[in-house]
Image: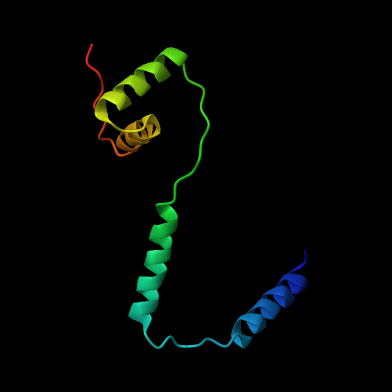
Length: 93
């Protein structure tokens, strides 16, 4: 690209930018709160995953979940959450 073409493109972008009509928000605190709520709700959404695990491990997890009275998927989700948040202690050998 030559210098004149770049300058023309920059001037066109500047003109487009200046042509936008910005509207002041009447209640910015409320808008910010709504935006935060939307972001947080999207962050907390669960995502389905598929994994392959040893059958013996799944049987052990199901047994532990049964003894705790919770679904095994809930137990697996809890372990993932604890690990992701550095709250899962490593086994000491």
